[in-house]
Each structure stands twice: as structure tokens, then as C-alpha cells.
Length: 210
Image 1: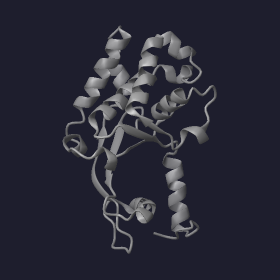
Image 2: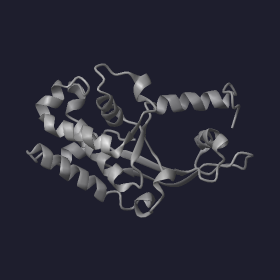
Image 3: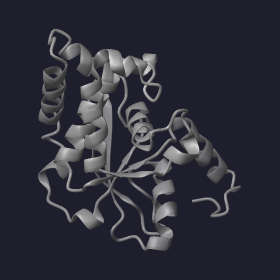
Image 4: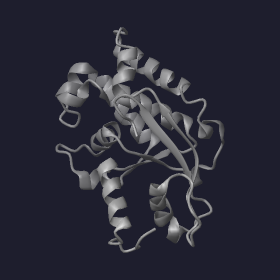
């Protein structure tokens, strides 16, 4: 989750959870990282980190660099330097058994650009899977546009144009470091999570309370 002032990363291991129970096991994380015993195997939080760099703080870190492409490269490198204490960074995993789920304005904007949407459509963006090559293609197009082109691009918008390159630098660093070449886009956030948690606690979800 790429925010304005920080980026939150959580590595969840569901390899020992039967496929049919994975959604329920992840939903149970609302109760905390350490789960009570249940008939459904628990999703295990391997590691988590809050990197004190988001789209605004990372941009401000290199605001004195005038060259657009050089500033982007420096931002991506600097963010990667702040990931070395996170366990997955040091662990080689099979690409087929590892995925990244991204949620943030940066991720959804890159997805909208990849789809070449003229107007943002949540139903097309949410759940989209993009490869590293597709993400890199979008980011390279952002660099080629320059600041003026990004402000004029309707897929980015003037409000996000000032922050999209720092967000893209974070996203590219993550895709470069992690042992997977695909990203799943989640256009859902804290409010949806709270709603699902309350529905689950009230027993109104099909799966019942867990």
C-alpha cells in the first residue's frame, strides 16, 4: 500500500491453507497476526514493514534534482535501499507461488494507463493483473511525457501528476526486488476492510463469523 508519507508491506504465507479456505483464512487476520485455533488453517504473517517513504515524502527527498529521468532513477534506488530489512527481499521464492497485491492511487493510475482508459472505471481496474513488462512500459511512457505531458494526460490528472513519478519509482523498485513478475491491482482500501470486518462479526457474510 503506497501512501503519501509511507509505504506498508505485509508478506502473508497461505501455502499451507487449502485453496478453498484461503479467503476465510485471510479474513481472519482482522483479529490480529496471532490467530486462535480454528478448523480453518490460519494465514501466517511472515513479516511486515512500514517504510517511511511515500509519494510525497519521496518526491520531497529529491526535489532539488532538475532532470526528470534522473530524479526518477534516484527515487527508485533510494526506496530500494530502505527495503533490505524486509524478509522477502532476502528470500528467493518460486515466481509461480508468489504474488503482489497492490493498493494505492499509484497502482490504480498505472493500471488505468495500461488499459488506456479515458475515464476511470473501477470495475475494469480492480482485480487486473499486470506483468512487470507492462508496468515498465507505462512508467517509461510517463518519463517520455515529461511533467507537462503528465499534467495533461487525463489518465493521470493534474492532481496526481505531481506525485505519480515518486509512486512509480516505489512500484518499480518493488517489482524489481520481489521474486514475481506480476502485480494484482486491488481498488479497495481501509473502508472496505472495516465494512467486511463488521459484516463478518455480525454473521451476515455467506461464510459466517470467523
